[in-house]
Length: 466
Image (cartoon, rainbow, N blue to C red; front, side, top):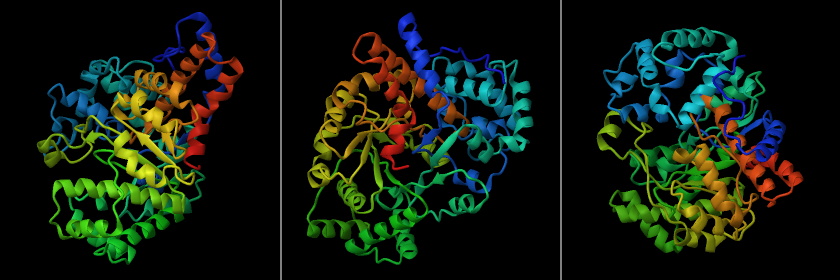
C-alpha cells in the first residue's frame, strides 16, 4: 500500500536526539488498538454494514470541517450536496472539493484526508483538479468491495471499541443489529440527553411527551422527570453504554433545594420559562446527572463552550452540524463549584471536561483536575483537535495536572476514515512531547516508554471503563 503522501517522521521533533527517542517511542505504540470512547459515527454503519455510496458521501457531505472551509470561501452548501436544490452530481461535488483542496494547507483536515487517501485507499497523489476524476473513480471502485464496508474498515483500522453518541429518545436498534450479528466488533452507545434537558432545544415540549411515553414515567412532575432519566440510563447501560455526554452552552452548575427545583421545573414544563430559567435548569441538571453517575457508574462528559448554530439562516436552511458552531469564552472555577461541592470528592464520579477556550487550560482546568478526584481533562476538542492544539494542551496542563488526570485521546468524529488519521496525529504529538521531556531531563527514558501506551489508549480505556 502506497504511503507516498505522508512523510515518515511527520510531526516528530527535528532535533536529532529528540527525534531518535520519538521514533523509538512511536514504534512501540503505532499499531496499538484504537480505543474510541467518544465519537459521532452513524450507528447504522455498524448495524447495517451497507456500502458507502461514493467518495463524496464519505469525505465531503458529512464532514463539517471540510464543508465550513469551502463555505468560508463563498461556495454554497448546495454546491456541496447539502440542502434543498442541492447538487446531485456527486462527481461534480468531488471536483469542487478537489479544486479547492489548496484551502486546507496547514490544517488538520489536510493531514486527515491525505492519510485516508494514501493509507486507506492507496492513492499515491495528492488531491487536485488534475487528479480529481482518477481519485474519485479509484475510491468508488474500492467502495464496491466488501473490504471497504464499515465493519471491515473497523477491523482494518484496529479499532478495539468505539462509542457512538445517541439521543435520549433513540431506540438503539442499530446497536442491537450490530450486537446480534456474527461480527465481533464492539460498538457502545453514549447517553446524550440534550433534547430533553435543554428547554431551548427545538421541539423540547414534544420531546418531553415522547420521553414520558418511552419510559412510562410522569414527566410532568420533577421526581417523575428525574426517574425518566434514571430509567433511560438503565436502558443505555443494558446496551453496553459506559458514558453520558452533555453539550451545554456553558459549564454552569447549580444545586437547588428540592422545592426550588420543583418550582423551576413547573415553569420549564409549562413552557413559560425565560432564557435565565433555561440556563439555571441546565445547570441544575448537570448536578443531577453527576449524582446519577455516582449511583449507576456512567462516566459523565461535559462539552461546554460552543455557541451552536451561530447563523440563524444556516441553521434554518441546512440544520445542525454545518460548521457554524463557534467557540466562546467559558469559565469553570465558579461555574462547577456547586456540582463539585455536592459530589466532587466522591470517587464514584468520573467527570471528563472538554473546552474550546484554551485560556482555561492552565488557569482553571488543570488546577481543578489536579485537586478533585472526580475530574479528568478531556483531550483537545474540535477546533483544537490538531497537532498544535494537542501540543498546547500538554504544555498548559501537564505541570499542574500531570498525565494521569487526563482522559487519553478520543477522535470525536463522524468521518470514519479520519479515525486512524486522528489517532496517528495524537500518538505522534505525544511521542514528540515525551521525547522532549526526556532530552531536557524532565523525564527518564523508561518513564516515557511506560507513558506512551497509556496516552495512546490506556488512559481512555481506564477512564471510560472500557
